[in-house]
Image (cartoon, rainbow, N blue to C red; front, side, top):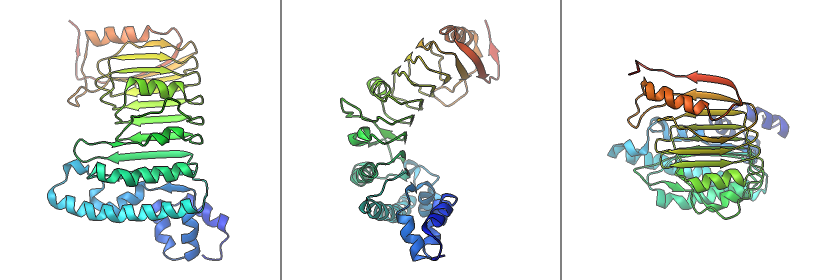
Length: 313
């Protein structure tokens, strides 16, 4: 294995899971050194490997003995990730992808380390950042404001964290895809992100339960998805090149839309605050009629709806 050329080993790594790459690095010093310099850091599978049977549970649901076991395993995982990121950063190489799944027992105590990891990724010009934080109780991890200055990043996926303290000028000049799931965010931040990211083509906002209004202004945006934002009352869309819009919310909202280009609409009826699928009634159909009337440019319509019964008085 040590006799293989570097590019061959890197090519093999692409087709292996993170767990398999780490296991193989034990057998070869050259493999280990190349792994540390490999530009793709996907810690999702490694998190599950380190945490074991507790990785599929939210820390907020742990019993006392599970909390103790989780804490020990999490410490080993964070030590591993920290050592690898520091070593990679010291080599001053460009990072292609940083993907992290992690559960937190103490958000405040852990924030410094996670801020450090994000800073290391940004310092090495990360192209794709995917951060999934599972929280204990109601505290949420607040992203460092420097994430909005990552000029080379082209894809950003966030789950289970909070966005605030955004700078006046956002420098996400290369960002093409933005996914926000279970993120604490407000109208102003969404508006600023969409209006100041000149290359943004895809936006997905889902289960962001605190947001009440969404205003989207983007010249290049082509794909938009808004779903399961239970407090959402108003949607305003100014996207002259929009081609695809996915919407799943309860109740149905009538958006204010400026999207003169032909576009697709994929609509799915949503769930209520208790997690139950919403039965269809006369008001649902009236709301749907109003929704479809906002644009005469709908060329393709998919309706994925389900109901135990239809109530029409």
